[in-house]
Amino acid sequence: MGKEKKTYEQAMLRLEDIVRQVERGETSIDSLTDLLKEAKQLIAYCKDKLYATEEEIKKVLAEDEK
Image (cartoon, rainbow, N blue to C red; front, side):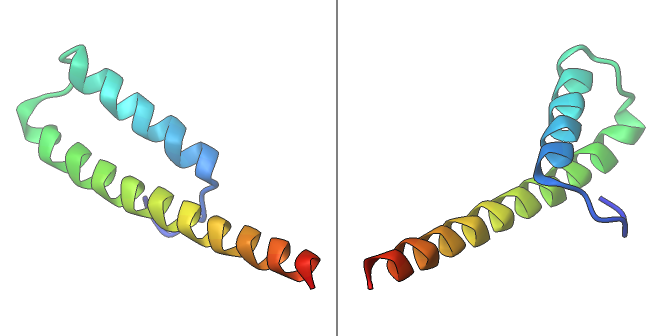
């Protein structure tokens, strides 16, 4: 994913791009491993982002209940 910060949406778009490349056979065997490593990092980023967002939402809702 690199050092630049990506949004969740950017990460998802890149994941979709990787999937398309692999499904269409647009990637060489040599670059397949790199793409899969990138996809794994993007998936972890997205999961973390979703978890963090869920926790923030829970906090906001809990504050409203007080």
